[in-house]
Length: 204
Picture 1 (spheres, rainbow, N blue to C red):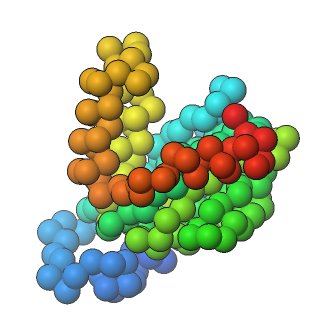
Picture 2: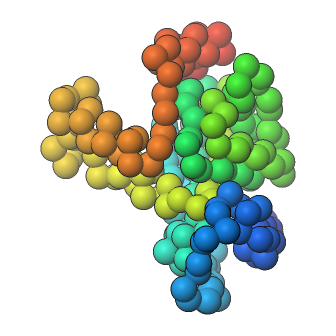
């Protein structure tokens, strides 16, 4: 199963890499200085959610001349994702490996079952959650921005163990700088909307 998922993800990468720059949202002036080099990522054990949410980076943007990156995400049952937001430059595709992802896109909620794909273009407000009693695991694929760096900072660097206490001014400033750098935008009512979703679906 893991080998099949990896091959499918790799095939998608190859397909998108073959598209013209305009198809991936870049400009006609985009110049790739170095040719892409083959990359092999050996399979490993499935990512665990550890009672909450966890990520693992697979393909890094630096491996693809900035065209593409991918991150595996594991989500515990009945867990809410981030506050609704949109990206100024980032386009993303979700491939669900295990479970069912509930995804808010604009004002519509869609369910992406295992084996399903979901494209979220830039500038569309969205979020996700796991409304089921079973674990959720998916791969998010990012185009034209090293968004894996944002996620690694949030999950592994800006932590209490590293001196960033939750709710502290230091952490809030660091998060604000990251969101501005990566063009991530939340509307003023984003956190209230997140609470509404969590309450409606009985999420943590």
